[in-house]
Image (cartoon, rainbow, N blue to C red):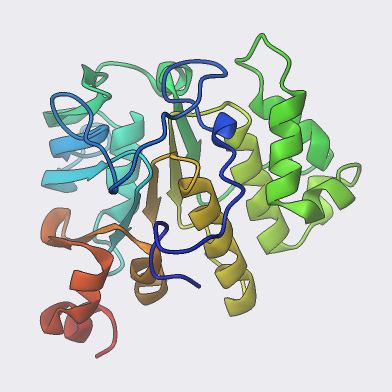
Length: 274
């Protein structure tokens, strides 16, 4: 695997699968890394504080963000609030402090459904496919908010995940764990999202399948699509990350590039096994 989405030749570089400005629009070409959105990062959960329902706060002044074309990874020990931070950005819990902004627009008060319409593609860790439906029907369900012809996007998903084309008539529930994750990511891409959010996409898969999924994530990022990812395999995730966040007890403990965090002695000792 490459260390950065910007330092290799992989990826079909077909930017039409991304959607920065509306249905069917492409990410403008740019050089020299990511380009911050006007007024701040492209997507940011800024100083988020909150928890579920009337329960105690799980997040404490937590900030995570991602720019166009970046892979931003959230790592940390079990119970650190990683998935909760992701869900907060997606609107699945009420914030008692802070805000979520997408391309400069405050979307803190929007429901998850409305955030999907705004351009968020979210893949939860579990229960993320329709097991009784075929692979192709799952992908079609991902296009439910679209009113245009989505066949080109489906072809791009099949190019990204060739095994899905081979098994497109097969019930998704019969697939392996790694193939199910490909279906879930592919369905999210069918919305032509402005940002893709993945909650532990490699949970429960073999190391070989994990490497393959990470390769495909790099390929998607090369189209210009921002990717925000929670990942339990911290070392491997930081190897492909442009930006990393280490959370501890719902708060930011360490922030830096993937390479910086991998080189940080305290991060290695505390979170990466030395």
